[in-house]
Each structure stands twice: as structure tokens, then as C-alpha cells.
Image (cartoon, rainbow, N blue to C red; front, side, top):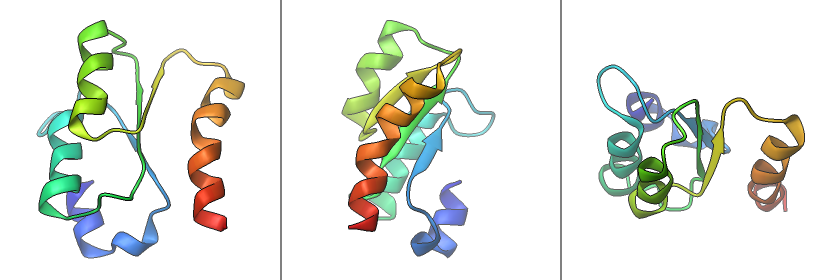
Length: 90
């Protein structure tokens, strides 16, 4: 994900990020997006089955903008994504 953003950051309106990934976890990836790539305004939303309270607390500290735990209801996902997508349009 980080490399795709590095190559073409304008192609993304937001990022849905899992916390647990094989090479770089979502917290590390978000920190790289924020600090290495300088994409402070790009919304990063956690979408994960790992809903441990420690990850919920670490998400905002790493620069993530929202948290959705699986299983989720569509209205919950839409509620978290809508404010960011509205900002992108307008």
C-alpha cells in the first residue's frame, strides 16, 4: 500500500487499512504514509477483524482517522467514510 501511494498519491481518496498485515502492520504503514510520504490529509480508516482495545487506542496515535471492526454493518462503514468522502468532493 505504501509503495502504491508513493507512486501515485492523487489516485486515492482514502485508505482502508487492516491492522494485521504480513510485512508491515497497519500502524507502521499509517506512520509511513503520514511521515515518509507526507500525506497528512489523506484519510486512513482501519477496517479490521482485530478489534482489540489496544489497537483502537493506537489507531489515532498513529494518524488513523477512523476505526471499523469486522463484522460491521454497512451503515456503520458508511457513517465512518462519509465525512471524508464529502470533503474530497467539495
